[in-house]
Length: 254
Ligand SMILES: C[S@@+](CC[C@H](N)C(=O)[O-])C[C@H]1O[C@@H](n2cnc3c(N)ncnc32)[C@H](O)[C@@H]1O
Image 1 (tube, protein in one colour):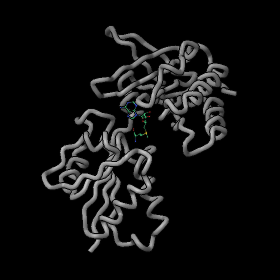
Image 2: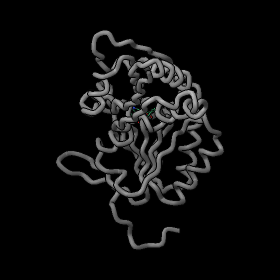
Image 3: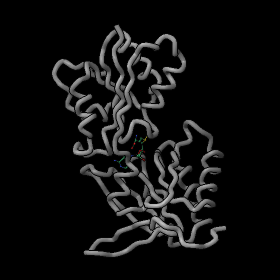
């Protein structure tokens, strides 16, 4: 008898961001898996088996979930934000593809959540109101040369940019290189948003022109947004809003 694997996103931090659909799945689960701090964010019903693990064992976690589901369990895998954004949903499909025949009968569901980029953008206005791109700055799973190529393409195409995993203690140099590159290509007053631990008690938001941005402003709990050439700041009701207009001026952007 095969069970189910449900991969859910818990939103950026505030429990109010857990969707009703995800809350229902939490109630349904017989087993909950995930990185320890994410499991700590939910209150499972009595009798549920918890399987906390480290954040570097995604494929093993996914295989464990599939194995339990094959034995008839209803397994919930929790991610922060949205599970499809640099998180467990893709890891599950990687594990599945390795052994497709074995896991053929298992029901799989992916339930979306509010990703950090959207929670951060909403705090400051609408910096992603026009075309934008999203880049994971960690070079754990891809080489720096690919990140650099994507950054150059994003500036060339005049996208606003959202950066996940900007800077960790083990790889502080990548974000320094990113900032240097952007500072050499963008006009100095281009707004940059450093949104840390958004929707949690530790939330901080810094907005600076790119010429004043420095790498220490980001860590692994920070989501960074760099505006496009059209992103602007307006003041209203003692608040500074940042937005990117939905229409592009009728100019040549070469
Ligand atoms: C492995 S990614 C996971 C992203 C997650 N699946 C999502 O959709 O938000 C982790 C990165 O997400 C960003 N992040 C996650 N939660 C955040 C929050 N509450 N505030 C700011 N950034 C956050 C940070 O850039 C962090 O390094």
